[in-house]
Image (cartoon, rainbow, N blue to C red; front, side):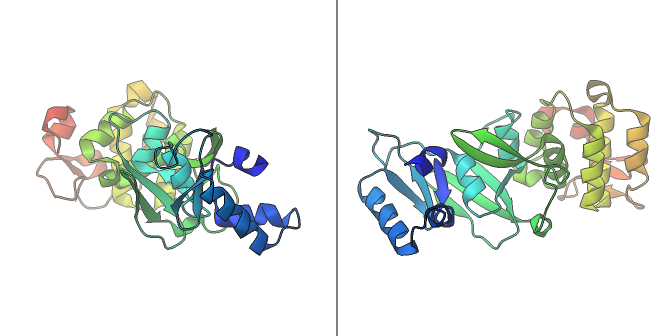
Length: 263
């Protein structure tokens, strides 16, 4: 019961490991889980993943926190992209799709009306300094959630805006962030290794330089890694204007920051 109190969502292997510390056998541990499942104390979210049911609630209707689920679907799950923006309270709109990073092969999963989508990130393997990798761990809903920092999320979002609901949602959401550690943003951008992504980040920072206190020195560190040839900011190759400093072809709506015209 102490374990359930501290782990509102947990993996089977986590429970087995905790029981081994008490000299409990795997067989006995599985029997304990089966007993609590039968009693309605636990809910099986998917094979190998359980949620604790608050006392007096029907397991079928008991709330299960989606961020805890996304962070525990694999042993290394990290809430990312639009789900990370939502977790930080910086999403323009609410989505029922939760992307999570993992270095393990995993399939998309649907629980109730929520979709959980894995994004393979082999860089997570053997990560010793999570803070430097843009991953933070937070106490949340009685448990612990791994989530990308706002700085890492900005880089990931501009790298793959489709995982954040498209350009309009991405731009509106990122504009809700009052402060970024710009050195961390640049570090994550350069680590991404994509000239196109670096240019998109540079363009965003330049467009919001006053609000985010962006200095010329920040932009120079990115500009030298921008594409050598013009690239479309939009994968659909939407016609637009060439922003020479970043070699980006940017749709007029994005240049004008006219949200009604964004797709």
